[in-house]
Image 1: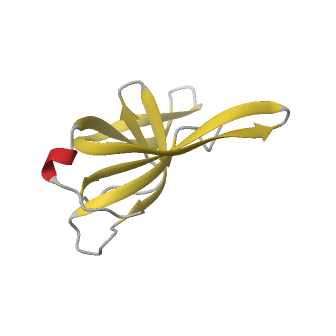
Image 2 (image 1 turned 90 degrees about the horizontal axis):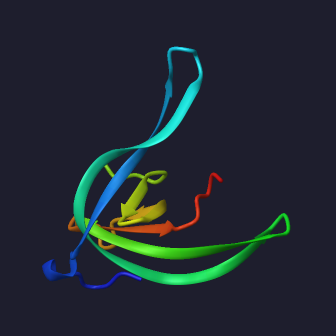
Length: 112
């Protein structure tokens, strides 16, 4: 799936968010995604499908987000692209040279 990426291919501003759990003053656990970093990216839809679960049909879109290499991007983060929320499934350094990352995502939340 790896392809040559040029500087001009990074045309979209995306925000990478990390998942956090905190405890509020009442002792309740609060779960949220919080902004981690905003970067330029290439965003490509790879495929789409309809999943059936518990008699409900749920669309799922697979997306590849390519960014310049960063060591602080890990699976289980979320990427916001405009109104879209993409959930990371894998973070790959395709050629092992730390030039860029290919982040494989789904548009459907794997937790919900």
